[in-house]
Amino acid sequence: MHEKKKKAQSVAEESVLTPIYASREMTRRIPKHRMPEQSTAPETVYNLIHDELIMDGNSRQNLATFVTTWMEPQAKQLMAECFDKNMIDRDEYPQTAEIESRCVNMLANLWNSPDHETATGTSTVGSSEAAMLGGMAMKWNWRDKMKKAGKPIDKPNIVMGANTQVCWHKFCKYWDIEAREVTAEGDRFTLNAEEALKLVDENTIGVVVIMGSTMDGKYEPVQEVAEALDRYQEQTGLDIPIHVDGASGAFIAPFIQPDLEWDFRVPRVISINASGHKYGLVYPGVGWALWRDKQYLPEDLVFHVNYLGGDMIDFSINFSRPGSQVVAQYYNFLRLGRDGYQRVQQSCQDTALYLSGEIAKLGPFELITDGSDIPVFCWKLKDDMAETRNYTLYDMADKLRERGWLVPAYRMPPNRQDLVVQRVVVKEGFSHDMADMLLKDMSKALEWFRGQPHLIAKKQGGNFHH
Image (cartoon, rainbow, N blue to C red; front, side, top):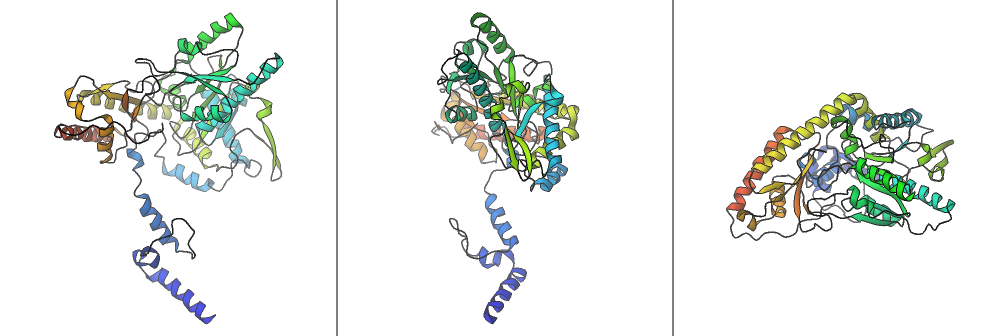
């Protein structure tokens, strides 16, 4: 026993007196596939993990991601204070639940819901979960309608563009729904009314229209699709709803394109999802799902949960999650207000328009979009310039990565996968000065390529999940 006490005292003295990088834990390999036998001083563990994470990219230079990479210190403090609050436990944390309800009502008002003071909606872990909730509600409503009509319910389909985010493909696979995709054609890389109408029938649970395609940053035409479906209903009697995937644009359009009708002002729009951790300006992960009113959220999807002594209503896919992101969303709503969000989003768009214009002037690049919808744009290499023959946009992406920039290069959707583009997402924290830094590094990369006439152009790049 005496020897154990001496050993423990020796270890304690070492943890106090030994410099961190000379401690035993720092001078030998740490286990990678099993838990270590002994505990380790917190300072040592922090430095071990901190140093390993240096290998990650700088999130502020990540122009591939839509996810928020900067928040004010007061918001960070509030989030830290709520890390231990379980969002699902509304009985124990009633004020956090109240804040969630306020956010839902604020968004319902922002998106012109006819019933925004008692809105039907919920927070989620991201817009992917929110999108799936919207899709599930459409399937359940369609199924109930078909049962009442005495028709089969074994072949539901959903119509969407081939440019949709991967969450919609997951939704179709998980819930056994046929995905009918509008493919890209020529210079059109998104869904339009004419092509969508060709794919709908009585088994269509709904049409997904995207406010801000991740492929090129363009809005899909919600109003046009709705009008086409109105005409289709007049001809066939089939009433097909629209779900708007507003993952990005639902936090952009209300502030910088307020006259654009895409939300609940369009009667055929029955549900909207959005990502609070994208242009909602919150760290990941929080999303939002809202319905026009209660009739579009089937009661069969609402659970009454007896949890820790209280009866709670829940209609999310996920269960336990921290309340910190919801509180951070509420912080932004109060801190920025409509005026603040307008200034932030307008600043992002101004930077996007400036940067896209300057990239077009560099010579070998041709813009496909310029950031006029959401502050996202992409470009391709010009077809007729000899200097582009010894490199591709994959090479450009690799060269920029040497300077810390993550500017993805990828193929466009089916039917235009011959076209490789490069894309920039401009968001809060990416300044005009940073745009100039990127332009300078792009110019240097072009000079380097010109000096490498025998370079073999790269035909494929790393995986890019938009």
